[in-house]
Length: 368
Image (cartoon, rainbow, N blue to C red; front, side, top):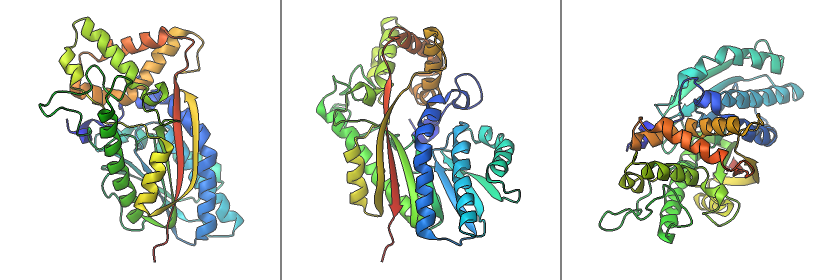
C-alpha cells in the first residue's frame, strides 16, 4: 500500500470522524498545554526576539478541533510576553501540516471562530495571524531553511514511513501470523524490525527539522509510547492487540480470510523513552530540555453507560485507524469490525485502557 494515501485520520464531521471523536487528544492536550506554554516562554527568553514574523508549524495536524486551541495557546503566550517585554507584537504564520489526503477543509471551515478566539484571548484587535495548509510527509523537507520558531508534532511521529522490512521469511511468509503489531506471541525479530524502522524514521525526522528550525528554536513531540522496555504490554500495543482480536472474530465468522489478517502489519511503533533519547543524541542537532511520561485512560469518560462508552471509544479508534485498515481489508467490513471492537470494550467494563504518552521538548543547537 502507498502509506501517503492512507495514513490520515478519518475526515468529515460524522460521529466516527476525527473532528467529532478525537476526545483522547483533548485529554492529552490538557496535560501537555502547560508544558508547551513553558517551552514557548523559554524560547522567548532565549531568543529575546524582535522578529517581525513568528512562525509555528503543527505537524500531523489532522482535522480535529484541538489543533487550533493548542496554536491559540502559543499565540497568546507570545502576545503576553511581547507586552511584558515591550516588544512589538509580531505577525504570526501558522502552518498546519499533514499528508495530502488529510481533510484540511474541515479545519479551514473553523478558522473564523478561531481568529475571533485569538483576538479575545490576546486582547489584540489588530492581531495578524495567517494560516496555511502544508501537505506533505514530515519524513521529508517541508519548509525553507531556518524558517520555524516553534514546531509541535503530537501523536504523529509514532506512525512510520513504511511497514518495516524484515516481517517476512526468505520465502515471503509472514512472521507475525494472527497479529497486526508487536505482541507477546511475536518473535524477537518482529520487534527488532519495528525498532530499526523507528530509528531510521525518527533520525530522518530530526534531520529535516534541524534544517527548518531557527537556532534556539523549539520543538515539542508527543508520542504514544511505552513506560518500560517491554514492547508487548497492554499500553504499548493498544489499540492494535484489541483490533487483532476483533479481526480474529471475523475470521472465525468467515467474513475475512485468515491469510488476509496474517499479511497485514501496521506502520506504527510505540517507543520507550531511552529509544527517543538515543536518537536525539545520535542525530545531534537538538538539546533535550524536557521529557515527561504520563498515562491516560483511552476510553471515553463522559458517560456512565458502558454501551455508550464502548461505542464512543470505538468511534475514536475508528477515527485514526479506518484509512489504513480499509486500504488492506476494504470498506465492506468496517462497520462490523468496529462493532466487534466496541463489544470487546463493553465486555471489559472495569478494565482501564491505559495509554502512555511521552512528551519531549527539544532546543535547536547553535551550530558553529
